[in-house]
Image (cartoon, rainbow, N blue to C red; front, top):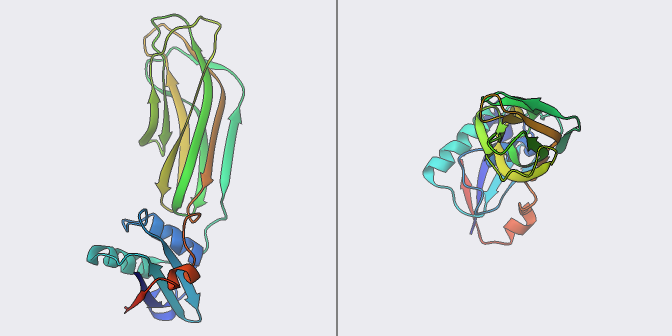
Length: 220
């Protein structure tokens, strides 16, 4: 059963303005559970109706009210995807992680994103124990790789992966770090690829689809 939460744009929103796409992303990036149900934002005149397939809990409704009150209505910079490619080879003997490559994102919309990575590496001998990690905002480790079977000093091994993340509106960065694992040993890395693509909204039902479900209106 779909539930509609109604707001006045002139009275309930911070600057008496709304950017529907931005508000949609802010809701997706909040503590409101949108992973197991669909929702949509509809505006007409001074009215903003936010539909949820499942009725919100009291705490989620409080979050929604706070999001609306804080929403500034200013559109974010348009963003759909970004890509980094670095062909050159580099090496390190550091036992601590050092950054190899990083991709920076400025003022992107809140929402769900898919991050992908690829790189090739080699190391000096079978006791080097190389290490690698992919980090988001220098805090969240999306993946970490350790020692693999030694295949020879001149052989390169490829590594790839992906992660789905919920990002808040603002600036973010993704980096690939690497290290030798043991002192006086060498780890090499080359052909680094990092990509990020916004995927939120592709499973979100439209207002028309939600209205076909038996609806309950909640006026706020």
